[in-house]
Length: 429
Image 1 (cartoon, rainbow, N blue to C red):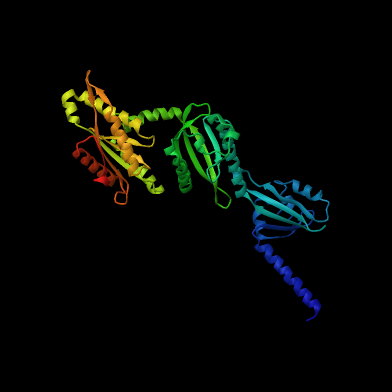
Image 2: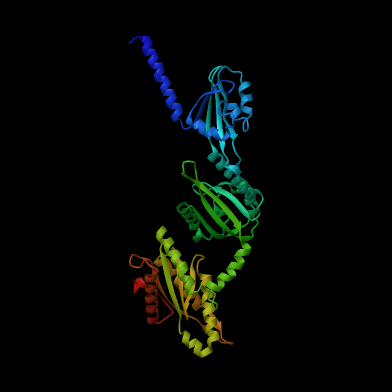
């Protein structure tokens, strides 16, 4: 075979490869002369251009696109370079959003003075997404700058504030320079025992995608307000976790109304301690938290000593005063994270989160001695009050609320059998 034949075979092979590439390409490819006359196009280009084809047929690219992109012919004629890109990803809006929102990206390359290659790509979905993002940006911008009772901020992966907004400054009183680098704890009114709720909120948000919770907050000026906080997870283009977006909402007025209703549903009407039903609701959540973070929980059961004698001797109204006095003293002794509930009659139960056996015994003794030092006025006569207390702490053999309550009740029985007005830990029985 001669070298000429080899050369011809090579050219033919390259030409076939080019034709194959054009016809299999996922984008529209059109070859024209500088005036737009088409001499080659692939099936995808035909598909993209057919909605624009008039009665003259698909012969000239610029004429076909004249109704939606008349500027293309001018772009070509004004391009003076011998070769190069005339336009790159020039957007052609074939139809409006109301009519389907078809948008093409057009790139025209001048190969030489005789040949132009045009690449057409359908970017309708991309443009629709951009439109939605612009709408979202407008919505967020309104929250950032206009709405008074909302605040939006951003957190790093570690929960540190990295973006602030004018609405956040209005709601909290803190400027951007004062807020950046802080945590949400800067605004929450939390006790030392409640610090972990910040970590919990971020953990729940990561696991569920978002998490919402109400908090008591403090404005920079010192006044308190209630805020509903929603934390949503942010992800980057590769769907990797990259931080959080936080939306604060002032719900003070709603909170006051809902708290009034909640008090009716969750608190004992006589003593102000929470009722038995609500205690079990709270305890279920606290045990889930303890299990997640491997914290201990202790339960104290206490019973007013000789309460029947009080009722029989001074009447039920004085007995009611005794119960109210016990609850009030307990509230003064217990820590902010502790919970006291009226379990029934003259019996109360106290839940002590993050407390081991020793810590529970110390709190129980402080509670017993404080009640012993108090009295109730019974028409000029001072009635001395004492209580018997049983304690139990979470362990391998007492890992459920039911087991802990049974153990604390058993310890209370031993305290009564020892003569009352004392504290007994179930581990010492």
